[in-house]
Length: 408
Image 1: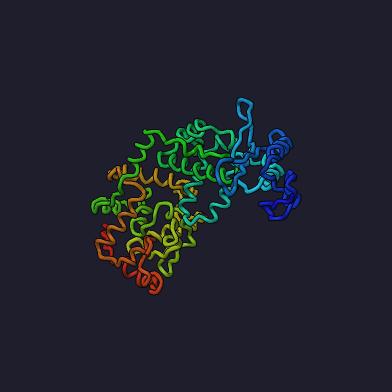
Image 2: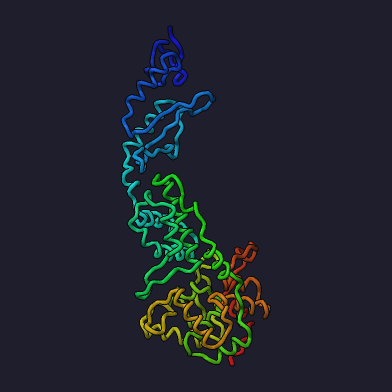
């Protein structure tokens, strides 16, 4: 007697164990022997195919694969990814066969460094924020204890200890990461484990399974307090010490509004003394490569810094005055704090405060709102201004000169 195959709709014998046309296992009295026969063909460690019964499912066949051996010697299994459920036994078997013929050994043995190199090549290319890239790269330097560790072998305690005790060598000395950097390290690990899951290296993001200790969280909340603009008395004091320590750099930052990282990334090629502008910036599309006019009060300071950088053979406009080497945000923060302490300025000032001071002064002297946003790199939502209005550097120069500066 002939019956219709539910898979390919062709007529087959009712005695057939499976459809000779499509391989579909027939659901009759022979079905048990069909599944048992096929199950015996799967070697140890090959994986499992099971049918979910009692429910009307479009894809009832589930595929489980072996991804390793646990400490107890038993296999570690997980659902096949990205698709683990199939309509027929044959489809499930083909997916399992494809999985086992692929090279998964490499994935299971991949180290954190190999994972980071692979992830960063893709992620950094598509990331719109330069400052985020810089943050991730800094965080990665503190993860050296994990570089050669297999990602699949790491445990929650291992990575938590690395984050909370994060240190690295700077000028030959061990330097512990700040609370903010430790937070960035954990963010980086979250992203790396997300990518590891996509690549079937692990099946769980253990970096998201723990929180930073309360001490780190408390320290970070103190650091992330509101920025403070300089008082008039503080700025007068800075102007009275031109040429000393790093005073000039701080004053230049106060009248350009650059973020610390943006300031330190500027090269001599970014300065156009003839047009009286500096082109730089990062973090967002609005902030990247923006035109910042040079205020007349700092024109001579910028010129002096430009020629000093040229004479020292430095590509960067700002550098360590002691040895002419590039200056990191960490270096700048240390020198900024020394200036605050030496001249008895508010000890709570931080390197981002000059940017806050610039915006505060711009609003105080009624600078055009759109000019201010263009200079500091904030997004402009008004489509008429952003897309249809052409602005030139002369207009920006006129607007920035609205800020009145007492140089003495």
